[in-house]
Length: 71
Image (tube, rainbow, N blue to C red; front, side, top):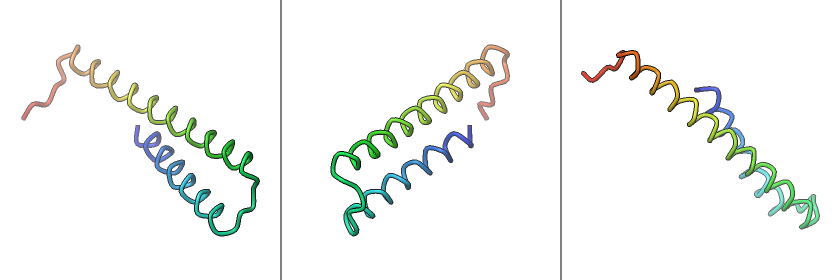
């Protein structure tokens, strides 16, 4: 699960970097930039959702088997 969060964070930072590069240097056409940004955004959402689902499944499994730590 930590790997999923690192991937999501990396994609977020990459999206910000794409925006800054486009703002200062304009290496892509507007259409290509939107495509890149939507792709990075979609991958970010997928990574985040998969990470959250895995976390919830792991926590549910722990609760079913009585391994909760409610200290």
